[in-house]
Amino acid sequence: MNLRRRYWVIAASAMFSVAALSSCKDYSPDLPLPDKYTKTLFVSSNNQIVYAIDPISSEKKWKFSVEGEVHATPVLHGNTLWVGTTSGKLYQIDKQFGKEIKQLTLGGPIVGTPYVYNGRLLLVPAGNTLYALDLNDISTVVWSYTAGGALETSPTAFRVKIDGVTSPAIFVADAGNNVAALNDGGGTLWTFTPPEAGAFYSSPCVVNDEYLYAGNDNGRMYAVNTNDGSLKWSFPTAGQVRSSPIHIGGNVLFGSNDRNFYSVDSASGMLRWKVATADAIQSSPAVFNQNVYFGSYDRNLYCVDIIDGTVKWKMLTSALIKSSPLLYNGEVYFGGYDKNLYRLDAMDGSQKYIFNVNGQMATSPIIDSVGGAAVPSISGNYRY
Image (cartoon, rainbow, N blue to C red; front, side, top):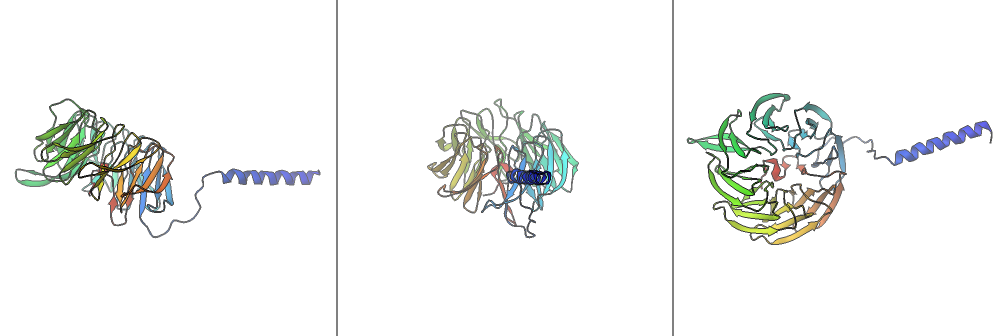
């Protein structure tokens, strides 16, 4: 072979090798994102990537890399998606194009889902301090509250009535065994500490002007008067309660590490029914069409009749489910430790699609419906 021919063969081989290597990489097509914003599902995991996909087709719109695992469910507000990570980073991301607007480095991991309230972003970067950041400038701390123990739950807000005057309030639960109600400026209105030793890792649920519900590591679910912090009742289970409860139609619904899912009467604190599973339940439930949905460490997602506790169907996955399910338009979305996001028909459990995120999901998906947001119960502003 002459020298010129040898050079041509080597060059051609190099080009084919580069082409072959390139074809093995996961490159997104270099196509412009559409100008019209449509319904979008956002999902994240411990693989340090946030995905935006079409909730019906699962077509990927964009992906955004973050520093650290995502354990806290992201939050939508306006045109922004807020994402906190275990590295202590808080990202402000344009929800349509997946571009970073701003980021802030905080003092520790963000594991509790942030909450948007009254122009503030409420979040806890580890430790025992709740920060209220200005939504227009997240580097500005408007106020802060120091709890009596570590804060790993999500805050929520509603109203209280004190001395006949109704005013807004923020509620937080901490691992020092306290639940507190705060005013608009972070001042303490009241604090509830159970008579039994324990710690709160279950986020509080408040949906009316009278009572708050929160689970405790001592195995109890507590009902607390939101106006003065007095105890109404407590319900015992045989394991830690880290599933955040929901309250609907006189039912307080939650799971326990004793492998049971409970429905407790909100007025009396008496058991209505319970469903046994094969492992711990830390997934927070969601309700649709008189059914309640929750995941278990036994790898199943359950659909249970809210009236009598009959299991209507369950769907087996390949790993534990800690993620709280999301119900939207008659379908249920949830993620698992098998690294998959599932979309199922809510009535019969039939599978619509599986979207692999290549990461274990402790967090939950959310959907921007363009005009509103569908969020899981762990987000603190869950509505039925």
